[in-house]
Amino acid sequence: MKQRKNGVLMHISSLPSGYGCGSFGKYARKFIDKMSECGFTVWQVLPLCVPDSYSSPYSSVSAFSGNPNFIDLETLFEKGYITHAELEAAHEKTPYAAEFSRLREERPALLKKAAHRALSDKSTAALVDDFMTNHPYIADFCRFAAIKEANGEAAWDEWKTENYSPDDEAAHRFIQYEFFSEWASLLKYAHSKGVYIVGDIPFYVARDSSDVWAHREQYLIDKDGKPEWVAGVPPDYFSEDGQLWGNPLYDWETMKKDNFSFWRDRMRHMFSMFDGVRIDHFRAVESYYAVPGTSKTAKNGVWRTGPREAFVDMIKETASEFEDDKLIIAEDLGDITDEVRELLDYSGFPGMRVLQFGYLYDGDSLHRPHNYSRNCVAYTGTHDNNTLLGGIWEMPPERRRDLFDYCGCGNDWNEACVGIIRELFASAADTVIIPIQDILGYGADTRMNKPGIADNNWSFRISKEQLESVNTARYRRFCSIFAR
Image (tube, rainbow, N blue to C red; front, side, top):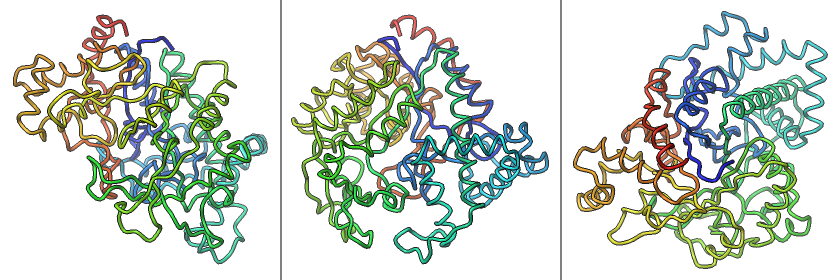
């Protein structure tokens, strides 16, 4: 990738599709076409793994899995795996929000029908078997998912039986094979248009996951699978009680002894899927926050020493296995100490700068564009922030005036949003990433996530008309002016 680059942050689920959730289908390609027209070269997505019951992609039943909802139904129809009537029945009710409840109720059965039809062909079944042989963590997940179904979807530490239906496991195997096949095709298309895709890797895994179930020795859990300490972050800008994530903590001593085999495999998996990776919660590599397992909030946690330089070395070694250079972004937001900054310097990875954070308080801030170094990735906001327009609306008047004066804006808020984005393009940051909501100038009602609040997140989508409305001339001009 060239040095000065720019792109868009948008999850697959936010794409148009016609079927209740964004997919790897034709609108993903239309989005790539639109990015190329704008001069954008980076598409950053959120984690592509199976989301939790609250639809969060940051808590998954498998760090190696693919979200079945992203499989394109029209592609399945073209392959003869679903009927025209089944395709018609899956049409969405609204193009403006992901229909997560409906998908949970209807999509698994439809995909299982597709799997049964596909696997009746021996050559397809052989391809699926070969894929699983080469991807043992995904095979673990498929067996885990089948056993979980046999136990009424109970958590693994509450299972009554480990017997399961081979047909259910076979269906999961095909669904994962199809997911990764369609993703590989989309990635190839993106490259043909000069667009590189950056993935996102959550630092922790869910307790009720195939990762913990199959590799319990790697985590600080007791013989019954219960964690004495769990992950979270202390009180901060997003939450006065902190965020109690509840993930089991890694047994770093055990992981060091086997040379971080789980993490090596995880990074290798991500590097095979993406042109770059954002490492969420990088500060936990230096020190991580441990909360007693019985706590109701994250207020009473303690800091413990992380794997530090040895972990960074592992990431670099794994990335070096690939011929193309990988963009590795360290999410260095939150409670950052000098020790974290020193570890980031040691890594050489670009950190993150979020313009909205630069105007929370009076005075200078490293999140204001004049302080950006070349080796950083600059955002107007992330998936956890309000939209830029929504953030402006909620700012105290004096902070808003400060921001507008900084960007040379008047009192037209929509004009100010464009001016603010222009400031990021003009900055020294090697990479600038703008959420699709800010590209379109949308308000707080399109926010993707509110940290610390489980419900009513992740469902934002754009319609095909909204995708077409992107001002390509404006961004193409910005790219030209600022050599991006």
